[in-house]
Length: 67
Image (tube, rainbow, N blue to C red; front, side, top):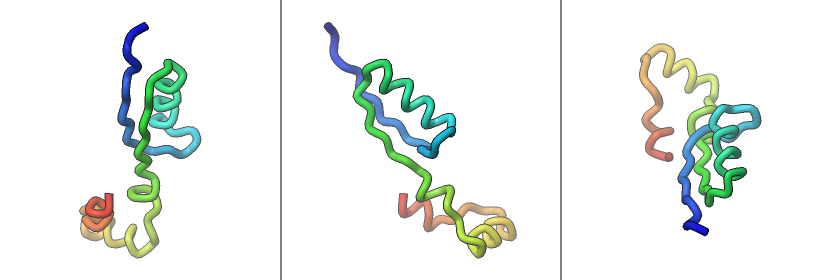
């Protein structure tokens, strides 16, 4: 049998997300999957962070730097 395919998956990991479904598909196909979930970096914004982004119309650089 051939080599196992290795996959680095980066995306949302919450239940029902398209990314999570894709990750699960790779696992079911027998791939060696390493997952980097972006939920804690890009989906959990506080109210002041949301207001800042809305007013300035730019993403928070701090979130990208942490990632």
